[in-house]
Image 1 (tube, rainbow, N blue to C red):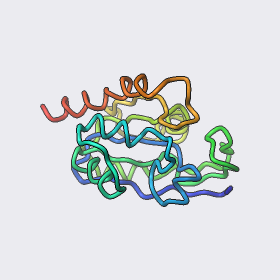
Image 2 (cartoon, rainbow, N blue to C red):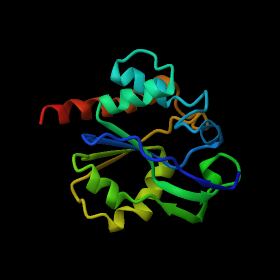
Image 3 (cartoon, rainbow, N blue to C red):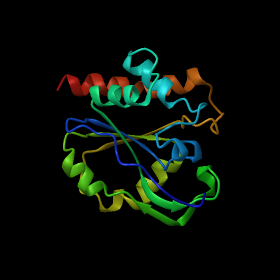
Image 4 (cartoon, rainbow, N blue to C red):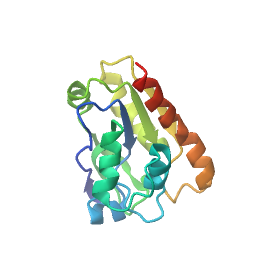
Length: 173
């Protein structure tokens, strides 16, 4: 694996929250699914936040996000990366996804949460300077990747609860 491409976004027209990863890892690319590595905690955290019980199949997982008006995508459209770790991404090879068009097509998005530091840094470097939406709330959350072992599941979940709060605040507007 070296030259890699991201997946299309998962997003409904009424999406209010966007969660951004960096680019899919090896297990995800092989499965053709976001967060497919069995030890990645993304889907377990989402099931907890959305109170929808265990999410077993991929269509059910993605539908739970759509039902909650959460969009999912990656900052990077493509890059060169030997292996699966974000640390191995050749920064000079990164091409960002088209956020101007995406946000124009999803005008209700007001909050963007980053699944880890690499996604946030790439977004701030490659996307934010040209983005004409100053009212976006941007927030980095701890990576759900098994490579991010500094926090256990419960600690990550507590940090990610801000998304549930965000869902409640947009529902009240």
